[in-house]
Amino acid sequence: MKLAVVTAGLSVPSSTRLLADRLAAATVAAAGEPVSVTAVELRDIALDVTKNLLTGFPSPELRAAIDAVTGADALIAVTPVFTAGYSGLFKSFFDVLDADSLVGKPVLLGATGGTERHSLVLDYQLRPLFGYLKADPVATGVYAASSDWGGGEGALQRRIEKAGAELAALAAGRPAATAEPEFVPFDQLLAGAGE
Image 1 (cartoon, rainbow, N blue to C red):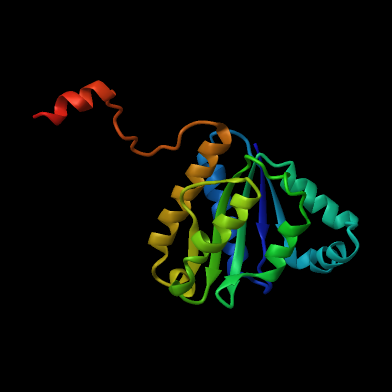
Image 2: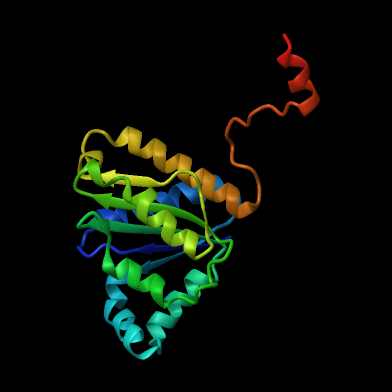
C-alpha cells in the first residue's frame, strides 16, 4: 500500500507533523501488509504552491508532491488550526489538485490547535472540503490540542490507533474492526413489533 501524508505545520518541530507521523505509524501498524509512506511537508513547497496558483504551472517539487498524493492508495491530511479554521497553505495545496484527483481515495483527517474548542474544524471544514473533492474520509478524525501532548496522551493515542485502523481497513477494502449491528430481516422485525 502507498500512503501519502500531507502536513501543513509551519514550525520546526511541529505538533502538526508529530500528529501526522503518529497517524502514519498507527496506519502502518494496522495495515498487515508492507506500506510505503511519503510525507509531504507543505512548508517546504509553500512558494511553489503560491506560484502555481498564479501561473497554473507546478514546479518539479510541487509536481512530485501532487503525484505522491494523487498516486497514493490512502491519504493522511493534517493541518494546524489558525483563526478557527484550516491553514491557508493547507487549503491552497488542495486547490492546486485536479478536482477529480482524490475521487474515492481513503483519507484520515487530522488537525492540531491550542485549545479543544477548535476540534469541530474536522467536521465543519475538513469533511466538507474532502467531500467536495469526492474523497472518502474515515469516520474517526483526530484533533490534538496543546493539552493532549502533556500527561493526557493516552486518550489521544487511542484515537490515533482507532483512526489508523479505520484508514488501513478502508484502503485494503475490508470492513473496519468495529462492532457491526446485527442484521435482522425485515419480516422478523415486523413479527417482533406485535410483541
